[in-house]
Image (cartoon, rainbow, N blue to C red; front, side):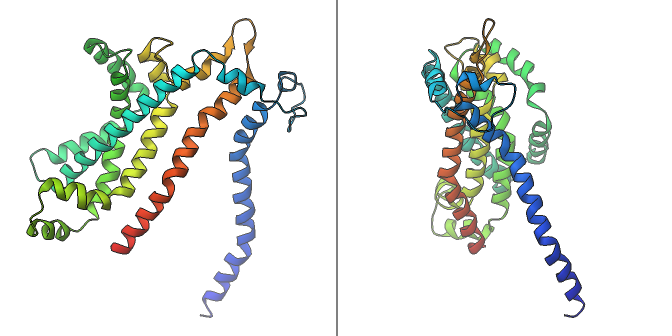
Length: 284
C-alpha cells in the first residue's frame, strides 16, 4: 500500500490537467458545430463582415426559409429517406445472415471469404467508384434507387459483417444446442435466440450504415445523374450560383436541417445500444 501511494498522488495531481485538456479538445471539436449554428441565424449582412461576429446581432430565420424554399428540397429529402431506409434494411439483413453463416456453419472457403471481406474493407470508397459505375451502367441501374442502395450496401457490408461476427463469437454454442434439443429450427434459433444477443452489434452497424448513406455526396452525385434523383448531400451544393456566389447563411441553415436526422437517429437508438451491451455483459 505504501509503494502505491506516490503513484496515486501523481495521478491525482494530473487529474485537473487531464480535465482541462479534455475540455480544450471538446471546445475545438464543437466550435465548427457552433459556427454552423451561428451562421445559420445571421442575416446576410452579418455573414460577410470583415470582423467575424461570434453572436448574431439580429438573429433571423430567413436562412431556414430559403433552405426549405428550395424547389428540390422535398424531392431530395424523399430520395434520401428511401435510399437510407433501403440501405439500413438490406445491410442489417445481409450482414446478420452473413455473420451467422461465417461463425455458426462450417463450409469450404469460409476463411477465404473472411479474408476477402477484410480486404474489401481496407479499400477506400473512391477506389471502388469507377468499377461500380461501370458495372451499374451495364446493368442499367444508374439513376435508380436500387442502384444507389446497392452501392451503399457494398460499402457498409464488410464492416457490418465483421462487427456482428464479433458478437456471434461471444455467444456460447451451448445456447444453440439447448434450443435444438427443445426442437427449435435453425431459422427460429437465428431470429429468436441469436438475433437478440447480437442486437448491440446490429445497432452499431446501423449507425454506421445510416451515417454512410445519409452523408455521401460523391456516389449520389455520380450515380443518380439527375436533379430529381439527387439526395440531400447534393442538395447542399445548390446554394452556390455564378452570379451571387455561395449563400453561406442558407447553406449553414441547410446543414443544420441536414444534421438533425442523424442526431435524432442516434439519440433514438443509443439507449437500446447501451442497454443491449449491458444485458449482454450480465448474461456473459
